[in-house]
Image 1 (cartoon, rainbow, N blue to C red):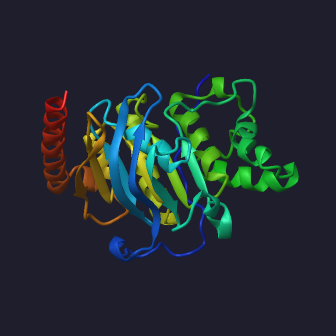
Image 2 (cartoon, rainbow, N blue to C red):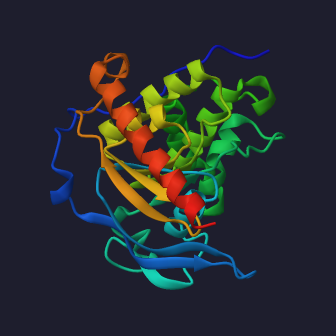
Length: 284
C-alpha cells in the first residue's frame, strides 16, 4: 500500500536567511573553458566558462543532446573535462570535504536498494564513509525528518509512492550535510501535482539551508519557479547559449506560480529556448 505524500521540512532553530546579492557571494564552482570530447570522438561540450556562487539555485535547460547532464557530471567530478578545468571553492576536487565543504548528487531515478529499508538506503553514504552506525543514526533520522519521512524509516521502497521514493533519494543526499547539491532532472518522471509539491519544498529547503544547487530540467515552468539563474544551453556541440536571471525573492510558492510575473518570465525563457533549439539545428 502506498502512503500519502509528506512534505520536505526544514529543521532549523536559526532565523531564515536574508536575501544577498549573488554577485557578491564567493564562488563555489568555477568552470574554466572546460570541454568534453568522448572516446568515440563526439564533441559533447564546447569550452564552457561559468561561475556558480554560494547560495545560488542554477538550473540547466536546453534541447536534448545539449550536454546538460554531461556538464552536471563534470561539476560532480563523475566525468573529467577533455580540456580546461573545474575548480571547487577555488581549488581542485580535494577541496571538497575540507572545512565542511561537501557535495551530493541526486540522479534522475531514486536508485534505491529494494531489499533495504528506507533508513538503510539513506545511511548508505555514511556506511561508505565508514561512519559508525551509532553516529549515523541521528543524522539519518534528521535527514528523513527534513524530507517529511520521519515515520517511514522502517518501510521498504516498494511500500512508497514514486514521489516518496524520490524524497528518500534526496534524504540520502542531505544526510551528508552538503553545501553543493547537484540534481539531474529528479522530478521528471513524476505527475504534475507531485512535481509541483516537491518543487515547492525544494525551493524552501534550498533557501533555508542556503544550499548552492545546480539542477537539470526540461521544464520551463520548473526552471523559472526554482531558480535564481537559468543557463540555457544549445547543442552540436553543447554550449552555453544564454544566461537568464530570475530576480524574484525567495522563498516562492503558489502566489508566485500564479502571478503575471511568473507567466512573463516563462514566456521570456520559452523564447530564448526556442532560439537555442534553432541554433542547435543550424549546426547539424
